Length: 316
Image 1 (cartoon, rainbow, N blue to C red):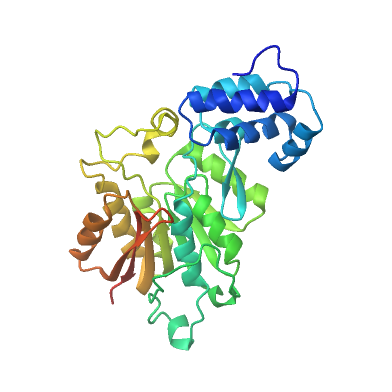
Image 2: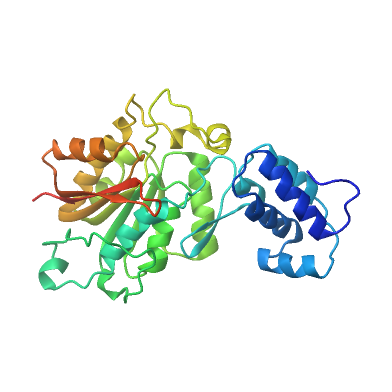
């Protein structure tokens, strides 16, 4: 926390970095700047300029720093979360988007942007996927014209909205079980002006009107093993449990139920992407392989080199 005798923004940010570091926050400098920007209603880059100019401490900054030191998520305090090209509104009651999930969205977006011939457009060979996927693909999004995407367990709308933003020709749908999270997703969709169908409901029963007609299903389901306690207080104390726990000791009951729904929704040859814990890469891939519903099952590392997402193709 900052001292009551501190009058300049520069000193207040310096003290905030120290307080947040002492609270065990690795990103203390980034967080202090983000909190100052939130208090000032501006951007972190503008905060840098104001610090040089000797600006005073903004009202409410000390309170924000104190809350962050108590490990309230930064995104709850600023009300914003960055994800790929988007700025999303988030807060209590919704899972805060993670950087690692950008890989999951990126795999789906890269698939949608692949050039495809007439056979592929008719539903054949849809699932061929490059093993190396750029974080931000720059290809013409036209190949996604007419392709249908479903995001199961959409949360704040993160993946569905990112897909629509970067592959605008795709038809995108999402579903969320939690009423609070669904409300955040609707808000984000409307604020961003993206044409995405977001429904309230159970992902394992969703979209009966689209069965066998979907080209891509993507999901970041709850997957933490029951009985496990997340290390980070931001997750343990603030993310909703419905978005965290996978319903079994290995954490895979709900992911596998969601995968079964994905199989029912996808066309033969359709493409499936699912996030998982870094210790579940082998077990999830093996479990999908025993169902007979999938082929070309692959696992993908995130940018930290940890197993993070499985992809598969709906078997014919």
